[in-house]
Length: 372
Image (cartoon, rainbow, N blue to C red; front, side, top):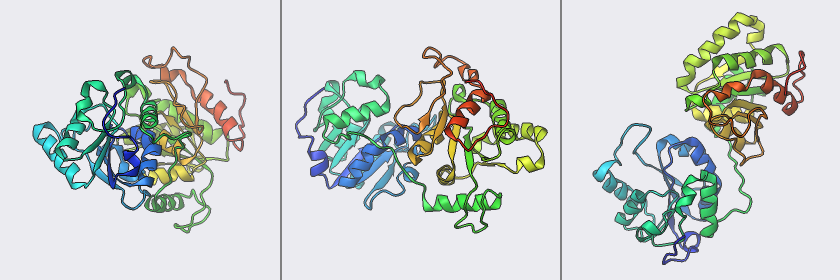
């Protein structure tokens, strides 16, 4: 830990516009930082500098007036952008200057963003960097290198504690946007998942969301497992409909699932299931309207947790997340199992159905017992 020349109180009490730099690429990364960014935005105007892949504009759609998002266009999953390279550094500094920020908070160890803030003429610069790069910063207390190995939530929580914006009991929450709700209500009415045909005020039937996306192959449960789970939900209970949600890249996977389902179920049964590969705002709204989520360890799982929806996470590549009580894990894998190749397939649809029946009591199973 290194001491710097400006008191940490400056961060919240003296900044007219705060530049918060959170450059991690994932949606989950941004959601994990959300409680602290919400806190900062409630105290002063914030410009959030982050990569477009983090979907900050969607996540912070209801932020206070004065909240802005600045796209950092570099190193976006194999592609380069206008902020890469030496010239990109100067472009980044120019964009930082245009934000009008007088204080920068860098939630990352990279020295590049501190240099850009210096070049932008920002006088008060906080950052994770510790003693090795303390010359880059002018304020607050940094994190030691050991914190690099910790989860993003642990890092930001410790950094906030050191720099006087700690949250005693962080609460992760968000809500769907009005545009997303319009899209979701229209879909539910069109596919018969609503008891009212009024697209603006459709009352959805109870339904569960099945999230099939996964960035890493080892986090993907696969078409067969998902098809078997949905088949059980169609055959063994009749209270809940099923909405499969994935991104455009999951279209082929969803079609594989649908082929298997069409071979097993009648047209009447299949009317209780549908799929959605539309906008992220629409997906968030569908999850908010749902009774719960089951799916891979991915951004949809984290969104469900922030929406306050109970969600069963199929964790395998990494240990289960524990930041939200809404995230429910299966007692199938041992501590030594996580990270082993192919271990996700040790989790079976039978395991999931057994836990689901406990979470959603209205799911009266017609073919028990199921293994724990």
